[in-house]
Image (cartoon, rainbow, N blue to C red; front, side, top):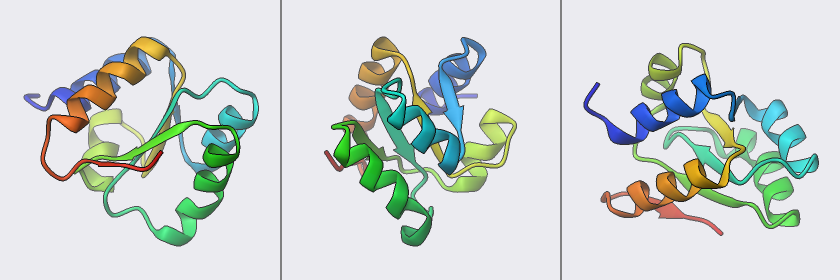
Length: 108
């Protein structure tokens, strides 16, 4: 795999610091564990709304990566369009990698 963002997300998952799916992500935010929320670029606005509301109410940063749900799902081995990172180091590195790519969108 030559994609640094997806590779790092895989490492984060293996480290047990990645939460996959909309409701588990909201639960992680509400438990004050989430440090960063990452959306696939084709994740529906309707599905994203409760996640974004929870993230904004708890001041958790959100980004949209220039990858579709299929790419994210294949790299993580589970169908998903949104994930929560529960580690500051992983979160900071993912933000940096995303900012260095064209198409990255920082929400908050």
